Image (cartoon, rainbow, N blue to C red; front, top):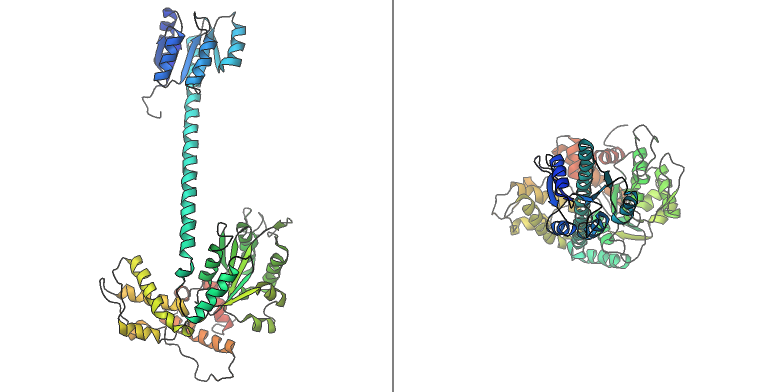
Length: 476
């Protein structure tokens, strides 16, 4: 219909040939005109061709214009209808409006320019109706396609986060799986604890996508990655004008996750003020966007994670005791990789396959010597570090080769326990020492580049700076 040479098709019905000829001369320049001397012949044309506009005389033998329009509606309901009447046909016009659904009427004798304008308006209206119907149909089809894609996507997510996608057969991991099976069917708040890189987010996703909220949103936020004001806005939303950059109202993650699950990573790095705000959500199920006086109720399952020992943070006053008890309803501790070495071969093969597929390389096996070397490494960065090592090795490997590692290809994997550690050394001090060594070594390997170091460690720049400050690696 948008082609330049397209002319709307109109049908004119009148029992006088001279009238038909006159109307044809008036309209044929702008329209594709079809003529009919009777109502029955006009109905047959409607059955065979798509018509935009009908002009019909009211006074015709055998079938009046109003009667014709009533029958025409059953054949082509959208066609625009124009009644041609004499000055004495006012009752017929009223009848046509009520019964024939006419959109215009023209009095005899007509003025040619005025008639062309009326017919053009009718044809334009018909075209818009058809385009709108086409757009609605396409939108409905797109929505249906999107729904199908979302269904497939959710099915893939659920499949991706089944237990068999979490690699581990060791007793330590079997204990984790047993806890997960018990908590998944519930709405209990879960606290995931464990060293950095042990797979806490993967477990959180598995809990959500296998539970009763799996069809609802799953949203995540690293609490160490943002300053207080931005974190508060991100979690709880804000009203336009609440702060300098608040140019529009914005929903927070808690509101977006309503009915689903929110995963709060590095929750121990929240400030006391943010801890208080989170406590209110857990106690009351209510949020208050920044700059708003309105309280909103939300139904969100909270899964939080930390590599800290929160009981120690509670004792030192760095973490609220009441918030700890709210988060610690169902604790799950993920084992460090060196406590589940029997899982390392499975993890290695999994990451080799994953990296090779992403890079388009044919590498399916690892040399026995390399596998033995990896199994005996120390992994302060845990699974994340192992995956980084494998990915680097796959990048360096030739296609169609057996994967192997040289000693200099695993520079971050030999951080050992401090030589001055004793049996009385606190676990938190030991963890801090290891973490400090690992960050320093990674900084060196990344030539002091903070962004690159943060990426290797799986942290944001802000998160890395916070850790470095806590570990006395930066001043101020």
